[in-house]
Length: 533
Image (cartoon, rainbow, N blue to C red; front, side, top):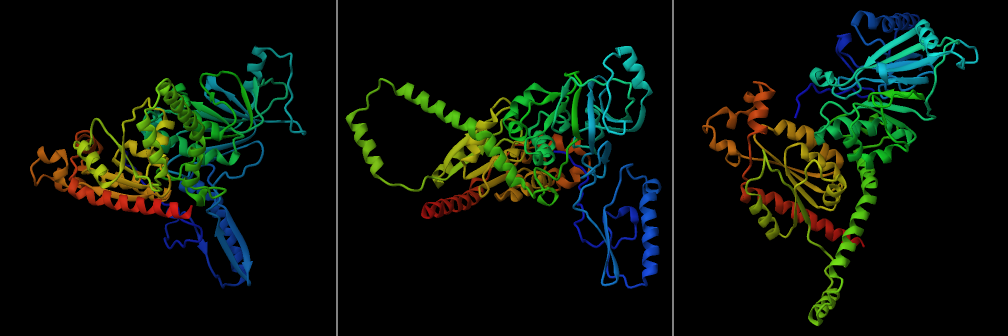
């Protein structure tokens, strides 16, 4: 859990009344009735202010505002197109960087893009030739090539750390910096392409908090989907701080986003050439995809469908393996007449409605449910088929997806493992147990995303008596009664007290009410599904 400044980009057409120009993200002018001459004068002055704004207000060098000007019924109108992101369209031979987000920077390069991993650089070459093509002199040797390269005119030099936690300096310091350099090509120089690609590249890092499943999805996989899915798999992923285990773990998803194997930027010293490159990833919010910011209005539900397509082949193979093992185990065993008769009787009985399935995500260390066994027993008495999941870092994601995607109700205590809510089918009931001192994080990181995914979300906020902290502190201690005062002391206090040293003993009578609601909802949904068939 990480606290940071949240932001809410203004929507198109939203009127801003602040007089502070630096605080405005949009400007809207409506129904101006002055003489046309004054409008034109104002427009000229306004245009000049846009040109000079980056110098006066220390805005990013590529800062730009997209406005639509026109006359309606003799009145001048101006409207900023806030739905069009900066650098959404760039001309050939240019670099454009969008540094307007507090979460991540993203740069676009179009033209003759070439990698040089030894210097952590990506070059964009523009030709001096009128035909726009770059000439190569096969006879030049390495010494001459280096000398000629040094003579090339550098047009633009941008620096970027391609990770999505821009506001956290300590985290970003662990991410390697890339140099994006635009040069005017010297026709006598020689720039060899070791590998030539005819599709764009997306450069990103798997450093930072990689190793924590929340951050792997929120900071990496989802932004990668947001940034690349419109290429329809015709894109190459170039990864800085490359990890074999990460590529193996998320290989099923990567195969659904790209037709090409990922490239280890630092480990592959060959010069890779691309017609276009995106450096960095776009991110919308916690575990979500904002349709209003997507070219084709894709949402988090579309991302879930992609996960379904990614894991379905592996799940089918798992089922076949289980069926094969079952046949081998039963081979040579002849069923008794009584068991055959019972089997036939069971087939004749028609029970159209299966028990709702409840999946409980178990924790072994902090924030564990200490009376988990009693919880399972109570859930079975209510009528659930219960499965307790105990995944670790080596558990195959397809197996977790299979279990959760088949569940009707999902219960877990707040923590990174709640990221698996992305595996639930829309309409599934998600009950998040919220320990003391974690309410804001629980709602922000998992509660709100669950609603966007279409889950039936139930927040179960424990009482002080349900926390292991109740036996460690006086009954009037702020730790129990005023967690906000503890948060004000800093993140380390919050982490040490509420995250690292707190377990939960559920009040089963109180929690039972939530489970019964979830059971009745799931059973009714199954009834409707059977009747529809």
